[in-house]
Length: 320
Ligand code: SF4
Image 1 (spheres, rainbow, N blue to C red):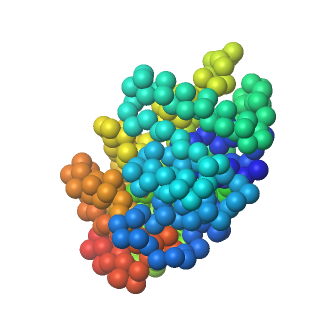
Image 2: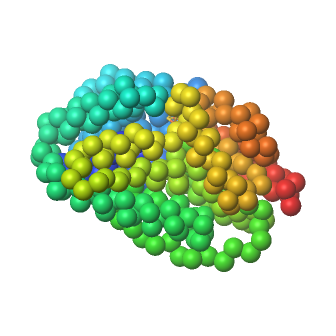
């Protein structure tokens, strides 16, 4: 059975070790198919997750508590009778208690997976899953600076879809204006934005969106004999990099060396309309890194506007 994850911080390796198939919901072709008009103020990503859960009746969707919108999305799905779905409590702090909550949530998720037809995970299977995932994440991260922005986005998406590594083709870089793309989910219909940025003379050298390089942060290391479940808990909890964490200093500590190493000259802040978490970061990003920030809002999960293109062109032009 397919188990669709709404966050990269819900371990796909744990699902796979239970004999089920984890899928990043954002990588599904039917996730962003548009459809009903948006309710005012509702983030299109959260709304698309609810719509998806309503139609994918032969699979389950794991929502997360990363934000109020997603929580409400889960409540809505439950009201519509989708009781097979699951709400994963993602702790917002980095304390020891938070790690224990994360561990307990993984155990609770494990019981849910058993109830929907999964099998108890063998330690050797989980260890194998972690090792394979580690290797693939590493290869993807190494390719981030040598491949086209679009090729990289596609390769990361493929990884979240089936766990596979499809090497993105190497790409000549020239001397464009180096930009970082920072923010929430950046879905396949949005990838053409990367081409538009290149056409304008820029290049996204650092894709720090929720579905880009940031989603590859989990990392598993263990001394010989370490329980793989402990490695899983540590590998995710200690490497989660997201805007909902309080304080979200880990996000800024993670961004800082990468922005410097790639000589980024401007930040494109990518967010969904209704996402207060990312909108609130615009000022702090500017202040912390001393870089110009262009805020782009996706008001639906299916694309971006012509007006955004003009703003991108103007932004790149001012940095040239
Ligand atoms: S984009 Fe923002 S509002 Fe939407 S689900 Fe993600 S964190 Fe929540």
